[in-house]
Image 1: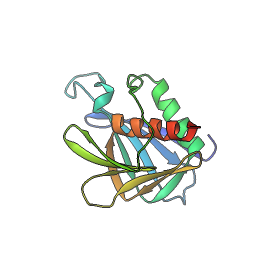
Image 2 (image 1 turned 60 degrees about the vertical axis):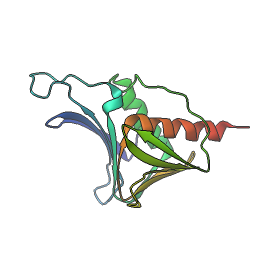
Image 3 (image 1 turned 90 degrees about the vertical axis):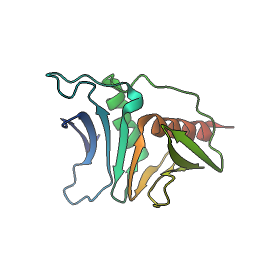
Length: 156
């Protein structure tokens, strides 16, 4: 995808897939997906189930919608994150989702940790994903949110 690349790397206890701009002057946003290692002290990486992965979004800025879906398609085609699909309902005006005891506020096209910090992800369907601050969002919550956005877009 012109203007962007995917950087793959191993961390101490996870593998990370990061979307980066190829423009050295770009200051964000940065979007990466980290999948924990089920055996961090082992010799080989063993991916945990996708429900343990997290999306790390940081630095104010926007990612074009086609670039976001190119990135997600590439990462999911690797196989480590392809196992999750759940029911995605059209997004309500405001709702709280709970995942592993953490709360997330979901609006028509916004997703944020329900911690009062003001960090959020906002989408303009078909155009862009914008990051405000820094968010750690579990992969199942992030994916459910994007699927619900897509479903809302396709409603007659």
